[in-house]
Image (cartoon, rainbow, N blue to C red; front, side, top):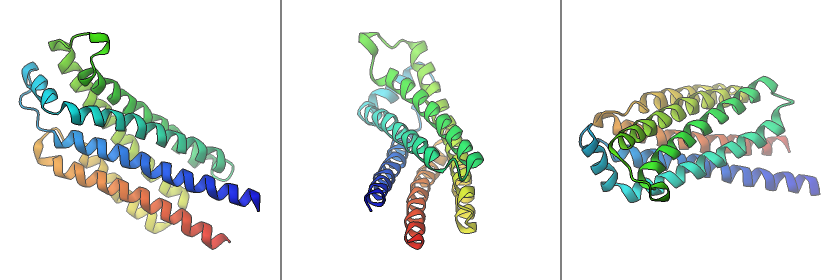
Length: 214
């Protein structure tokens, strides 16, 4: 009985952390996407863009760091619990979770360099453009890894409905990550909302499965 209660608590906490991780990543990505387009592709345009959205970017930077850390922690715990039943599938999920975290941390460092000058070091022209490019590279990397991770998790469930839904969410995520132009910004927001909805669906599926097994 004590073991079951402990397992339930871990599941509840894991579900909350799972949802918070996806929610923070989605909120950060949407807030950055909504700041587009950059006034101009030159140095002055990047600097104006950063100054106009500095507070938003500071919050987004923290959300990216926290969200990616939470998701990585949950993935590691899931790997420990499910690796015996799904060794290959969970190995893939763990690898993709690490790739997601790397992409997110890369974006965090680039965005942080733009809005948090380290030790008072100035941001020169070369640094601003490079950091902006690295930010979008990191977000793109993270988005593609998340799309692959969504499909990998869905395959483990062996549910046709979840797999089909996950493929649609993953495709939307892939398309939505190409938001260099202002036209695709709404699509990016929709893809992030869909991804968060997918995370809720997975929690609901796990809860329903646990209830059936009792």
